Length: 185
Image (tube, rainbow, N blue to C red; front, side, top):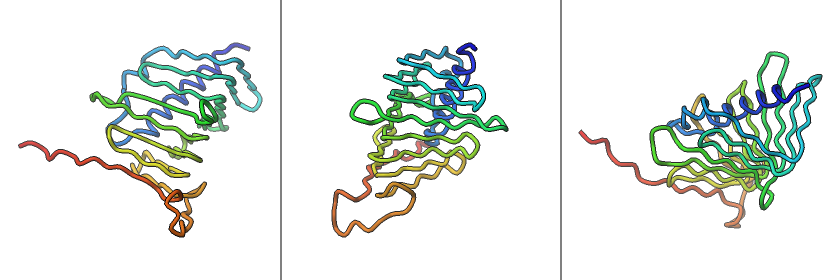
């Protein structure tokens, strides 16, 4: 058994996160051609269940992309689609950071758990979720981003359903949206 399948799984997680978390301005395309650097205290590969588990101060870098978590698990279904789950990290949050294509802007995100499904191209952030791109940002207990429709759902509960805040400001979703410059003629 070699680490090659594990690295292939992590490369696919990178591609998934790079496309799944980006706004209409895509993540840095050149990152896909860069070598993957992975650090963890432990790597476990289960070829039977197609599961690759990276544990302990996991740091994944590829070009401008960095993912930091306590644990990253990549699974693959029978048709080859992969799901990635990053959990924990400093302050209990998994984090990512990546430069946006053709711009001097960075996309950053964090949550206690970040999941991406390559088949549906949906990325979900669970608990203390925060995604920032340039000056725009959203916060909530749950953030879902569909990279096909380029739509976000942000709620104040642990899933796509909103719960009444009953006036409690700490249970409200927050967003900051910067004004966009009008196109120059």
